[in-house]
Image (cartoon, rainbow, N blue to C red; front, side, top):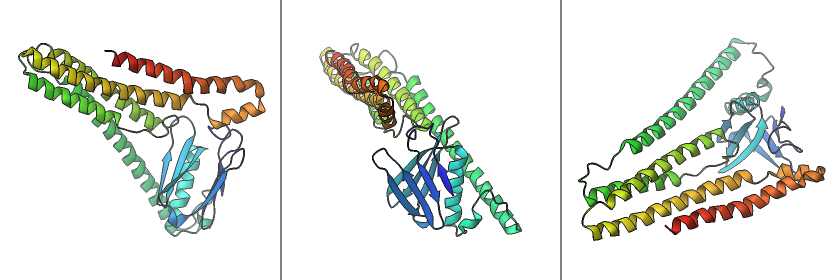
Length: 298
């Protein structure tokens, strides 16, 4: 059984990806303009299959084998689920001839196996949804905790304010340490990034409030030393945030390979990818450096 990615999807405009489900394994073909690559993976060597099927747009399927990941994008949600079904059924020892979804079960055993498989899929999707909701709730609770914490009464000591400042700075640094893969096309990664940004911004905002409170503490010479120390740490966090945000913007701005391929076919369109490349490699980094220089001058 052969599955071909849609030419309307990202990265498949000229040479669409293909997945061939065969008797003993599947073959993933990712063509290219000057040569692509093809990989045959036996079913028993596939450790995990993950599917990213957004509500809108084309789906992505990932195969993990021998410590490496093989990714194919541009299929419909039903196609990636069908491919995943074929792999799982083959791993359980079913013959390939019985995997075709176009064939209807003819025996009671087939009916039971089909029913069990669909129940398993429902449970898996439910668990995935519950896990996503739990992660969102945890991020929301952490954000609420940051927003509701106060620096105490007006007579708070210098040391107590300093401890709370350290907490906010560490929280912001932890949020900034998160990495995001394929944020350009993955809705889950974008959502994860947005939550990280909210937590970082809230922590920095609270840290700035605490920094202002340090000026009101006695003794003045000691509070000034604390102020300079934590102001430097907050600026480092802000610079780290600016760098991460600009890296993601640059990543999203760079034109895909298929854009350049299309420009080879339609030469008048070359202005767009050139402008985007100049913007991503020269203009945006200059804007980033300008933001950082402003903070360093504070």
